[in-house]
Length: 379
Ligand code: ATP
Ligand code: MG
Image (cartoon, rainbow, N blue to C red; front, side, top):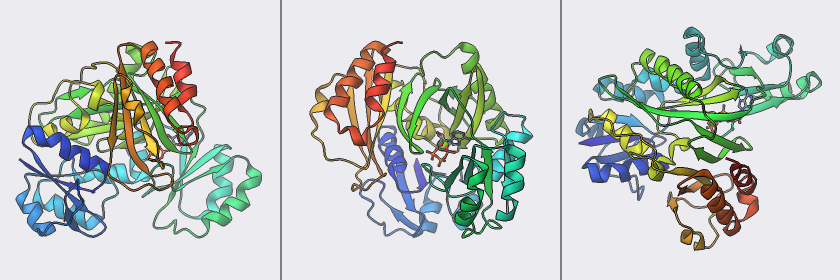
């Protein structure tokens, strides 16, 4: 089978690699240039975009911020999975919040701001501290602002005055004092069957994911069930096909949805070593109409993002259970260049291996690693 992926980054690359043993051929599209590329070398293809769509069995996306004309082109071919509605919902926080409200799914309290002059009223309604998010094109914490106290309204309004809020409104939401962040990655087939990975625990630094612990420690059956119930509601409403990720804030034993990602997700990379079938293979299986693969956990696994820095020795590969996945990108500050997956038979052993890994890596690029590994020793 042939799959065309909108987006030519690491997610398309990992889909390509997962497709090889299945005999599924993956091509990617650079959506800024409307150009078909090889997902590994990034070399442009001689095939035009329309030819590649005609030739593909399925068109899918590695990220949600795909230009509208490309989404329409794929939709018209009847080959787009997940659907155009699902991708548009993930790409637009106004639509996303609207869907959550419609389905009665808990999320942070919010207001939509279409003019900066509304800011004082909104602050009065919601109270500080607040997080403001551009409704489109944000990722890794870009397109976000914080408002700690009402005194800072004027300065923030000044910053926001340069933006076109009529076109791209801002979601103003209450800052949640969460106990932790978790996410659920799951997959729905064409026939409507579901498979779920366990909830995982995510650690962010400066708005970017740095570390995922899988499965998340101390998850009750009720919490996992709560997450799955929310996932099913969303996926069924969207008639979703493929891998979907739902990010949550956990407050006590309640989950609030932060956002959804209609695609394979960074917090699912651990599945490449830690689960029977990885998220990339399961996405391909789902969109190609194949039976879903088992999501059973093989071992406790941590995923450590390599962000901004690739200049360290490779000696950590001697640590048992340690794997590295490079994305073939050049180094730049804040850029995700690759990740480690490190597995062990239980969390104590995993913590020890993570502490060992931390010794091999520059602290400034992996600021959470050692402290989180120490906390994991408790479990
Ligand atoms: P990513 O692409 O990494 O998922 P993003 O840019 O889409 O990020 P969010 O997931 O909405 O943005 O926010 C990034 C991080 O900022 C969250 O994971 C969380 O740590 C923090 N954050 C966002 N919204 C809130 C909130 N309402 N309360 C507290 N923290 C928040
Ligand atoms: Mg997020």
